[in-house]
Length: 195
Image 1 (cartoon, rainbow, N blue to C red):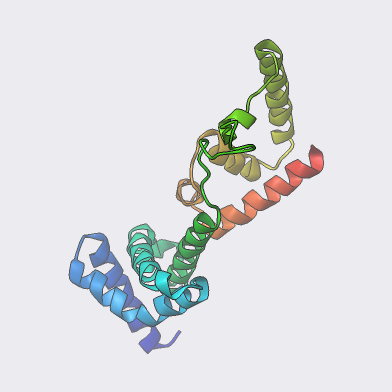
Image 2 (cartoon, rainbow, N blue to C red; image 1 turned 90 degrees about the vertical axis):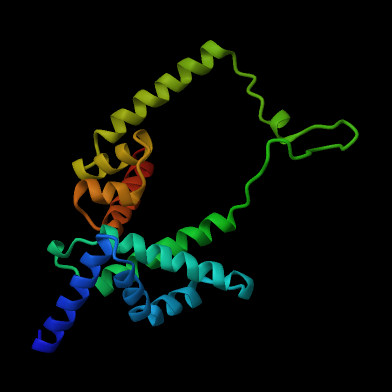
C-alpha cells in the first residue's frame, strides 16, 4: 500500500470515528465523499423514478448505520464495507416492497357470502393432535439441527429461535454480514437435504 493510500485510509478512519462520536460534519463529509458510490447503488436497486429519492435517503441511512457498525480492527477497508452494507440494506428494501402485505380481512370467494382470507385459514385439526404433531416436528427439527456444523447451527438458532437479524448475528459472532448470510443459506440447504 502506497503512502498516499495509507494517508487516505487514515483520513477516512478518522472521519468514521468522528461520525461514530456524533460529529455531523464528519457524517456529511463521508456522505459527500461516497455520494457517487451511493448513487451507483441506488441506480442498481431502483427501477422506478418515483422511488429514487426515497431510495437515496435509505442509502444515506445505511451509510450512517455502516459508520456506527464499522470496525477498522477487522482489516476491511471502509469503502468496501460501506458498499456491501448499503447494497444489502437496499436489496432488503426491494424484497420488502416486492412482497405486498395481505390483510386477513381481504375478501375471498363469493362476495355475497362475505368470506375473508382469515376464514380460509381455519385449522380443523383437534387441538391435542395439533399440539402433538407440532411437538414431534419440533423434536425432529432439533435432532436435525444437531447434525449441522456448530457455526451453522448457531446461526439458525439465533435467527429463528432468538429472532436476531443477520446483522445482529454478525455482530454477535464477530463475522461479516455476508458470511452470516452464506452460512445461513448453507445451513438451510443442509436441513432440506436431511428432512
